[in-house]
Image 1 (cartoon, rainbow, N blue to C red):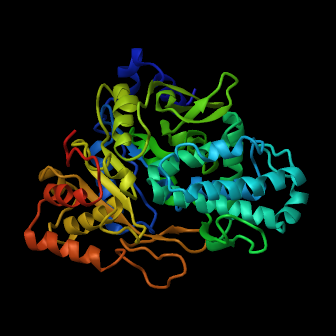
Image 2 (tube, rainbow, N blue to C red; image 1 turned 180 degrees about the vertical axis):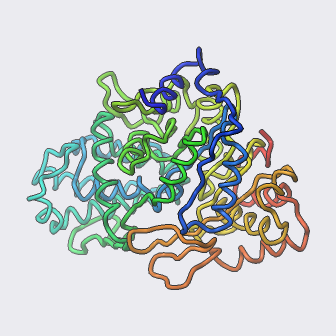
Image 3 (spheres, rainbow, N blue to C red; image 1 turned 120 degrees about the vertical axis):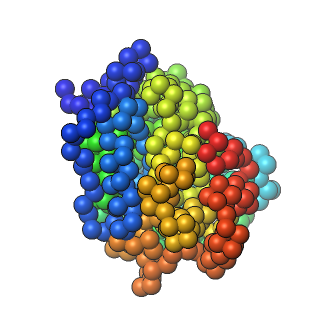
Length: 480
């Protein structure tokens, strides 16, 4: 039995938690360190000091977001494209309008027009190519399908409506809504679609694609266009980091706002499973036959725990949607009890959805923000990027100085979004299509950082003050 399987099996029960999670510190233990040269030097040094400090500790674990953190770009959004391109659905035309309307009762009246256009196009496609199944259409039919104006109408407006839901309500609502596309499928069917998508799009170079609905079709909304980024990746740096953490006795958990089956498929597809202790992610309800329905249900949300032959269900419910403040709740409900109430030692993030769990826990010794270089001052990723540079350049923090001051050590890791996507030995990011690296989204970030410097803010003052610009719910820096 492998050490990871041994640990994973123990994490399934609270009766023997102390044995599974408590590690015996060994002063003679050789600590595994990061070696890759395409880490930003301060990030590599900071994480290596973190592992020096925490290797062999009792109840030691860290938590990673997945999309745009563990992965470069968003696996769930890329999966939506794969689902549309292959027509991997389990809905008949009569079911689709009700599913698309789920949770959109407060959307503007135009939402009905969007659903009408999408449903009409789907009915035409179903008549010509259906019935659709989770396996998708045969490869021989896809060329014909993609030249069909009804497919372009359907695919364009489905993807565009996802963006609209985020605008009309919130991204939390759109995270739920896009999961309802999998209604009528089993866990395995969703996993299989996701695994195929992750493998397919990790092997293509980054591009930005645009779909435009056909002008010749009569529609209520009219002609629309939507652009999306093609390609996903988990860099070798992440595999190196997870491996080092695992070898140093520090458990690795994921808490994601993508679907649970989609993320466990990603952990498998990108070769991370042997280093992973478990995944918390979004869950929708299942009927008595095990088929997904159009209802989000956090009460049915449990960790997915890796085993030698697949995945099994964890022992504690998340009790919340795994986004924003819900990530804090989910960690406290489903991970912390397995470690005798201990909270994470480090967090890994990119955006507002991760801000709470990467700032509220007083146990956090380090946080790495993966720099998308488009996060504005009204986004948690933008503020953490500023704080990371404030700690580095103004407060003069390294890992030990931050710890001595009682602060979390915030670090900013740059990436290269071009080609097959990778990290850069810089805090700055080379965004897709650009030859000039960027640190921040715009001058507003520079101005806010300058204000921190001018006011001589503490880390707490900076985070508590500026987070009020974009958070509805925040307990405060190091409040938990």
